[in-house]
Length: 137
Image (cartoon, rainbow, N blue to C red; front, side, top):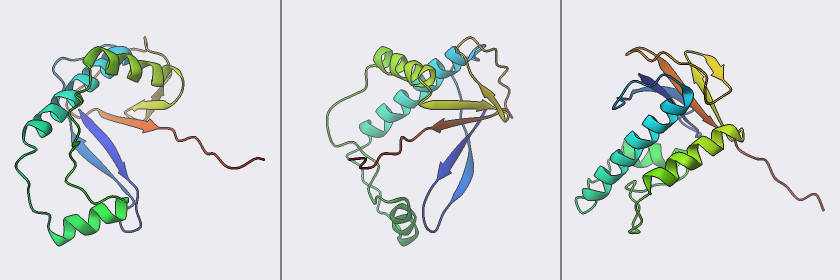
């Protein structure tokens, strides 16, 4: 499948299509969330295993990351590794609470038991909703 990633920044305000490979083909939104979390945690662990090997950032990398608001090597310097079951539970809850919206080929999905058909060219978009806050008093 293809995951749409939105980058916000002064110089880069675009959506990139990133190939994303799941371990198994999901049939529902709940399974899509579960499989996506599994892959993301595995990728995170792989990055952490390689954290002692730093890649020098090019000027373009630095400018790109600065436009997004943070220049870093993309590593978590703590020792915490996400617990898979807790991360899956949190992702499901965020979807059910409306904190995350999921679109499959441009169609918004509303329930965990909504049926999905994922093919190689299926485009999935995860939108994390941001709460606006301000001083009301």
